[in-house]
Image (cartoon, rainbow, N blue to C red; front, side):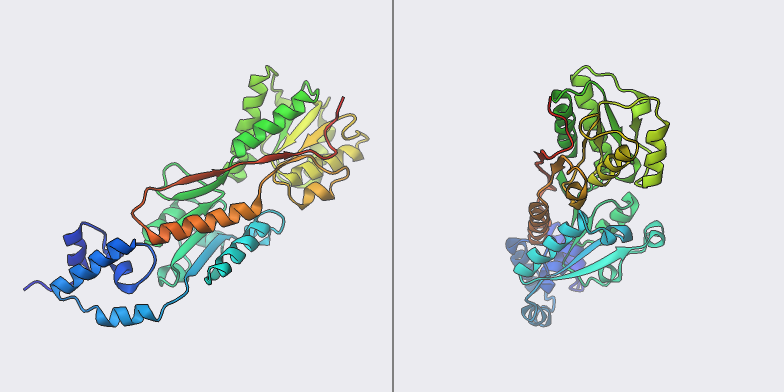
Length: 334
């Protein structure tokens, strides 16, 4: 007689062994209907489920993991706010949140957090950009996962994203409609797919409006160091009418360095940022920017993860959240 195993149940129902395990142990990741089918099949072949069911009844709250690169957890202006709202939303569902900062060496060696390898979490949120190979290793662990503010078309996983391209397009169009006949771009696009999308949105707007893109006014390699930005601006033989910046920190630094060079913002040069972070209000003058509803971003990410935990078989979803232009003081009005 064949031994009653999880693999035998999986083969009988045409599902994965991991789905069988989730169903038998009462963990999230399978629908109620599938869980009942698995239990019925287990009883049919004589698989010992009583002990498992007793263990399941003792489990009440979900344990959710959240991982990101170390520098993301140090960020308290954009991702820090999203992280805070994620924690609030999970607590409102009586869940618990485990955080893990991914070190560079661990990412390169594909060393996953212990709470993943030991199956201590019911679901996982991945905040911002990590190597595709690292995320693929996470997916292969079988834990339900949602990527937050990062995506890759080659990954079979749920994404929750900002409409970066549209936001950059709106910002650039706004600068042009306010009278700018030349617009520059500042941002390190290799740092994040989001920044690359913002650069693409900038290019879309410039092309649509029939404005030429001057190489001297496009710097998509420079990082967020004030001294580097100052040297770059000072080296330019002339300046554009406006700058679109990949984030508010760049906008803050561009505004401050232009002031140091005796160039008035917005009278001589307009500036627009992205994210509506604390840098937008610290800037003098205050920075016009593209706003992201960070609380909604966090809530939608948690909702999607819980949906995935309830049903591992549903199609993967790409959720794109809208953005809004926030007009402040750094764009000239003729």
